[in-house]
Image (tube, rainbow, N blue to C red; front, side):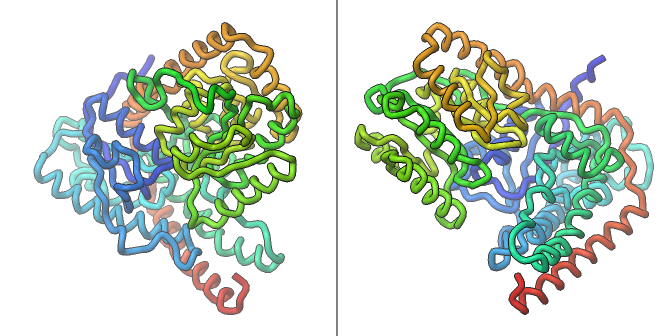
Length: 489
């Protein structure tokens, strides 16, 4: 029996930085899905640049509140990102709790409260201990017995698995391990205070269970990210022609080595001179000139392409991109504008999604929404989003020849009728599994079940352990500072 939709609640979402990225798009969509079902949604964040955020976060569609951006920096001299992320979120949460007390005085009793936290779980114990209404803290029954407070943690991926620990001498790696240990422990302890943990894919759920264990995270459910499929939404529209009708092979991802964009270049080169005639590879995605890896990796990709005999160009504006010579084989579009990226998606023959073990991957969903087949690595999230031969293909990302074979099939051996059939199947799958409506229904079910269930226990022993964990974090910072003084960090 399915959980009945819960009555409208006050939902507060806590997110570190409302910039432009997959995690930010997800949290905006979570807010929209819940707001569309009648809940009152407020987003609290430590940073929002109105010139660099999604439209819904700045145009009044969503209630966004920024607190404490100038108190703690995102990092200190390019280091201590995790420590600063925790401090920024703790400060944000104390400000939120102050606002919450004022809000309760204005609204009185009678409305359920749900906190949704993602990325950084440091605030979850604070919300568990101090976020409940005074009557709830004392164990008393509140009016109508339906005024409840619950906390849901949306896990994109364990932070401790995202931290880079390789490189350098054995001593340096030991220091990094000692520095990270209390943060890794603290992550699992803080997450255990949530009343429910959900993940963005079955792949991520398996990793979360393996890292933290069932006792800390409970019965982890899956709530897939989504795209807006309503008429007139981004990426849904008619098709035109770019570059005189060239066939476009498109890769959309950040310029990071873990995204393995080099695979797309090698597979495209494998088509040969005749196979590449009238075909252009476009590599578009997130790029920040302040991020050294973005700059270096773009240069590495350009060098790889030219070494293979391919002609390249890099365009930083739409106008320059549209006017590049016909002879260009590989076009790099760093920080491509959203509207132009959607045009590329709607007019490409095939999307190349190269990362291995991607946690979920929203770009394949956006391509499927636009009716474009997807070629992706047969690992991670794409195993759950792409249906082999129906909405795209899954191939070994360590074998460029397999990718070249699929490219040849799409370019030269599949007729338009088959492409239209796949486009229809892809659009139907997105609407059924990955639409804003589908996400809203899943979130409603999770919130309803969470409100009906008893709160997950978070006893005093764990709280004392948490304080020891905080002390360990401070010790780790001290150790890192000492080693830095000796030039080891």
